Image (cartoon, rainbow, N blue to C red):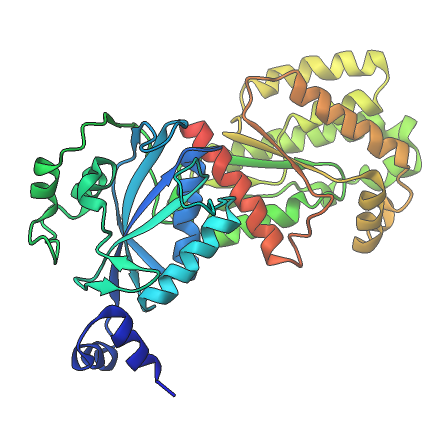
Length: 405
């Protein structure tokens, strides 16, 4: 049976001694990839593609600008295109297998006829080191790269002097000699090498939700994974909270006023200054929740007085760049509340949770200018399922790009 080394030598059409030297030295392969998308949220798909390639194959070393061009060879929407340089220990067939799988996962359906068509994601291997690869399913350098400005122009951004091992010309010369007359426009869009860098474009991310929705847990995970300053609500220290759940009519006003004073003080303390060692701030509440809860719990005259005080304070506090609302059904909220076991929460009525949810949705609808992301957690368990957590991060990535551009 042939070893992996012999198989790799045959596929890549390289001397076995050369491959053996690479293997013994433990050197990384440098792979140039062309990325394109003309369906759905094109920029978000290119960005998520880079993050997933980093997870599966290696590290992104360089990225081009993002270019826009008309579909070539078929009628379809305009493409966004870019090139990246990836460092990987994987061999060419492994890289090809991973990018084909990623294309499929991100919604690409390849035509059985081989004709060009629109796609959510298109990944092509342009160069693999300086190798010449001739195989049934893979040819490198890409055989049509010299005919396509939407490949050459982004490639010239990151590898202007890289020599084509067959044509013996560098990228700049190939671009100058290209006969591709299709218009190509450089866009203002920017791609990021790492998720942390993308998330660091934020200043403040607020994660909101009903009681037991999981907002504190998600905020903690994001703070840990992305080096963010964590701002948590200090509800456990409120002396009126247990009394409120026993007698809402008597303790509603002092509870809401104490919450408002505490949240205002905390926001002014925690969000007025950035931590030099953190990239952004993430909180498990936004101070506007005070008005939402107060409208539910207070009598009309009490609420009018409360709102006057609230409006004065709200004008002074930092507003989130993105407002995330985590939705869970009332039944699941009650299960979560029971599981976490806070004695004073065990008597919460389903109707109270329903009212809170409606209050949040009314707030979101009445503030269309706010950058809001509503995440339905009905089928997601981001605590116990890493893939569900990645799904949430993917939604956040898309929203951050929308805010930036």
